[in-house]
Amino acid sequence: MGVSYIPVARAGELVAGEMKEIDLGGRQVLLAFAEGKYFAFARQCPHEDADLKNGVLDGAKVRCANHNYCFDLNSGACVLPQGGPPLTVLPTEARGEEICIRLEW
Ligand code: FES
Image (cartoon, rainbow, N blue to C red; front, side, top):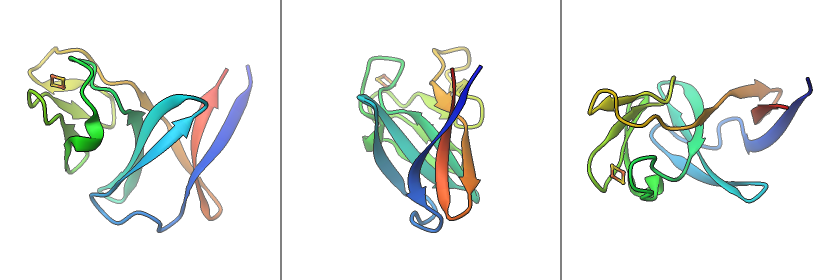
């Protein structure tokens, strides 16, 4: 198994509550900074495909602006409504001055 680290931001680039759009080889991902951590997750809501860039960060959760489904960014679990479709989340890691998405393949 291989591991790749894709740099997506510089340390300190995002302020708390900010999101950045990332094109990850054609896949649209958002990087968010919340509660002192970076979170990377699919830009497309798993409910009905709304753009989560228009969503609202609430600590380490993102709430979709379309039907208010809420996702825990640590696990991707849908917490409102409970048991809803999960959000795809990707691990991030600070490497020196760069924030990277860690891809395993
Ligand atoms: S499309 Fe996101 S909650 Fe429905």
